[in-house]
Length: 151
Length: 151
Length: 151
Length: 151
Image 1 (cartoon, rainbow over the protein chains, first blue to last red):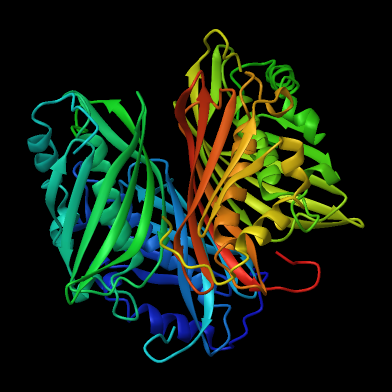
Image 2: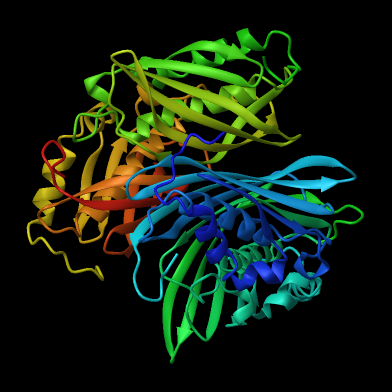
């Protein structure tokens, strides 16, 4: 149950519409599996074209999906006319990203007027078991929408 | 001129050999343009399949290439029998990753016995002008090579 | 209820004994109010000598107490003969550190063999109300005890 | 030679005036030794009351002075009517903070309209030798001055 009340009642469509404009998400094969106010989950499958030198998913790809989950968690809380920008993020890597399926969970930790902070976790699913692979803390800024920067 | 003396005289080949096993670098189209002891530069071209919702390169892809530049800068200093793992990194985003070509510079800041810290910068080249897009600080650990984890 | 089983049965004494050798904790007036395996809470009172230019507790002092809470949460899980070093931390500041009493909560998120990651939160208590002031992610390393570096 | 042109010609006085209102700087014994546009250096002496359990300066105190150096580097570039807030920072610790004197260097890396990023380094001076102890990356926000929040 989310603690946040969205300012835009059609937040789910807004998130989806923006998400599907991220070409990199197609390249990674990620898609949203949960969109709640301040809480977004994305899923992608293991794909050899995303790997580092040991055959695991590259830490940067892990970060890409975590950043998107955190960004859309923040975006889900914003009024109609606002866009969201990532200012910075920090990722800690706990285990190699080894698995069949990966789930990135992004949750808003603090929704300030200008600055939003989201935390996220990436899990690898392997033979039905879930393992924590990485965590992220992501600082975002909400800015008024302007041409070429919708959502 | 690098301040570091590499422990492995064939560091350049070692870096290249490991780099070209990163499938994700093919997906991104990145390749090394400079390999010196403690200093690695990677280059990639704008590609629509790497973009976020506004058509810029996704911050996570920026991080992927920065992380690799920093990791290989550290790896270039290591003795033959060691591998390198990213423990964590932090990325600050200054400007949208908008441009024709991007160059990621990774440099070792501190080479400890176990912990290595690299700093990096990503530049966008647009109509011959270079713009700083993002910076990274990356904490890495050197670990003895073991089966399935060479370089 | 902690999920961790301490390797040193006298972890509580070990944490206290080390904590009270931190002179800076006396200067800040901080003391432990909870020591469980992988979970430490520290408390300190508002003191004018710890303030920044607006009369709030300086973000660095907030970080000092958060770092200690996270470090001791990690230290509580270590075997007798190991010491703990902070490699790096990242602090996000949500609100001014304004209040009568402050509580820093440090919890181990991942206890690896060499690398431990702890997360923490600092709360301000004001007129009986608790407010989240800051969060931290702290990367620590366990190293064998050596002379002059006990705990 | 600084690359920045200060918007407030009396930036040096403004920085000093704000700095000396930070009571924690008196507690630490820190004082500015250089104030240029976008570049501030602070110095403090070893003091037993700032130490951790091994007798070195606590990482949090290192961070306190680094955060202030970075914050004032940013503040030096701001127009008269603006204040500066730290949003987040990340500190990497390279060596124990062991020495007679410590110098914190803070430099603006990117001065955006709202978001400013400063980098910093802390050096320990021991028997005339300088050693890099820690680095920081600090994200700051400029906000219009309001009552109770001047500088």
